[in-house]
Each structure stands twice: as C-alpha cells, then as structure tokens.
Length: 357
Image (cartoon, rainbow, N blue to C red):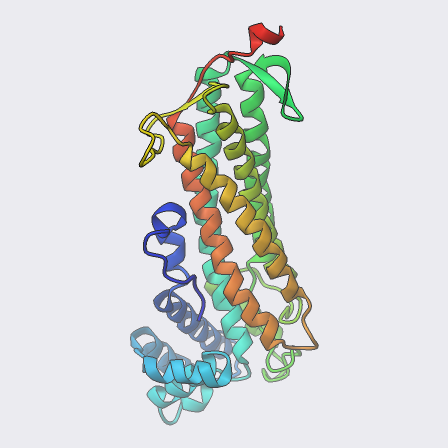
C-alpha cells in the first residue's frame, strides 16, 4: 500500500534498500498481521474475546498467506487494504472464532499502528547512521582540524579560521538531531486504537486497557486515540526533513571547498566526466544538496495531510502513504552518502589565506 516507485538506476545514487524494504508489501503485510495478533491477545487478556479465539487468530496470522489479487482489488475498491484482509482472515479462522477477528477495531487502527511499527524501525536505522556520522566528523576534526581555512561570509572571503571550526558547524546540529530523535521517539511511535470514530466504543468499555496491552506487546507507546490528530506523523517528517537539510549544508560546503580555484577539499574516488577526464566531480556532496531540497519540498506536501477533515480523511491518509516513505528513504540515503563523503574527505590549507591575510 505504501512505497516509492521503482527507480533501478537512480536508486544506486539516492536509494536505500534497508529502509525501502520497510515499506514493501511483504513487510507491511507482516506488520498488519502482527497488529491483528496483538489486538486479539490484548482483547483476550481484558476479557473482550475468549482466550481460545485469540489463540486461534494468532495461529492463523503467523502462517497466513492472503490472496494478493483480492487484496489489490479490495484496496482499489475500499481505499485501504484492511477490509479485505480482515475478510480473508475471518474466512481462515473460521467458526466459531471468525467473528472475534478485528473486534471493535477499524481499518485505521491497524494501518496506523502497523505504520508506527515500521517507522520505529526506520528511526533505529537512521539513529545508528547518524551516530556513526557524528563519530566520523569527530575523527575528521581530530585529523584535519588544525588545517587553516578561509571563512566565507556571503560567498566572499572573510577571515581565516580552522577546519575544526568548519567541521563543528556540521557536527553540532547533527548531534542535536540524534538527541532529538531519542527524545521524540516515545511520544511519536504510539499505538493507534480508536474504533470506528475514535471513541473506543467497541471494546465493551475496556478500550484503554486493550490499548495498553497492545502497546506492551508491540513495543510501542500507549496513547489516547490519535486517528485524526496527525501531528505525530508530521513531527517525524519534520525531523527527517531537518536532518536532510543539515546534511545538505555539509554537502554544499564541501562542494564549494572542492572547487579547483578554492582547493580546500579533496574527495577520494570523486566522480568523473565523459568528456573532461581532468574533472573530479563532488557527486556525494551534490547528492546531499539534492536530497535536502527534495525532502524540504516533500515536507510541505506531507504537512498538507494535517488538514484532516472530521474524524477520518481518505485524502490526507493517502497523501501520507505517498510522501512519508520517500522522505524516510531520502534521509536514510543521505546519511549513508554523508558518512561515505566524510570518510573520503581530505581538507587542505586554503589558498586564499595569504592573499587576504
């Protein structure tokens, strides 16, 4: 239901297989089924359904292979994959426990909670990469930090300073971003459970308890129903875009430093030209700039989904599915590219220091 379009060649430049896989049909389906299992188990623990029903639902979900064609047809018809998935699950569970499948829940409960499971995994991936990048920048500063550079203000030579001063403007905000993600995680990655209109009315008065049990089972935060309050999605998207923007700053600086007439940066393995063999193009730096601008544009599109009419918006929901995976993939790709760039980077003394000293 979600995912970026296939880009066989471009993926080598701006793709990320690990994060893109989290938005694949297979991983999404596994997450949807995991949520249905957690729902059934939580309802059994709170007395909403029988323990035997939950056991049967769990057994079926763990080996269930749905009819993919029916799911696709159902998605095209219903605008969401869950209604047909639940129909197929109820058929597979059979009597007398089929009616206990998905009891009290609505499609959005399952889809949003399954998304949170996958976004939490995205966050784990990008957090590790961000920490590695910060460590790489520290190593770069330790090796090249004493090199004298020319600072530039408004694209003009200003005063001499050190490479450590420059590197710090790359490292410090990225370190703050890592800290921010660790702080935000518990408030963002939460169970969504509300039932048809967000009141948890279909759980025999035990909706809050069901949500708590689901949160424990799935490793997500417990929270009141948030199905029409999309700030969690928007805050994570904003974090992704801001991270990409900070990487873009690094990339833009390196691209300028690598200009022949500046000569402050050398990139090992820089890109070549089909017609000018003398060139060493700062491809990874350019990619970081492109991804920063890409995610800045996508954030504007994603924030349109905050305009969420009443208690459920098919339009806003679909917009999230289109935009958010691309933002996650772009951020993950940027972190990998930035780490490679920092490893390949050598900072050289500025040729302009003597001229403007």
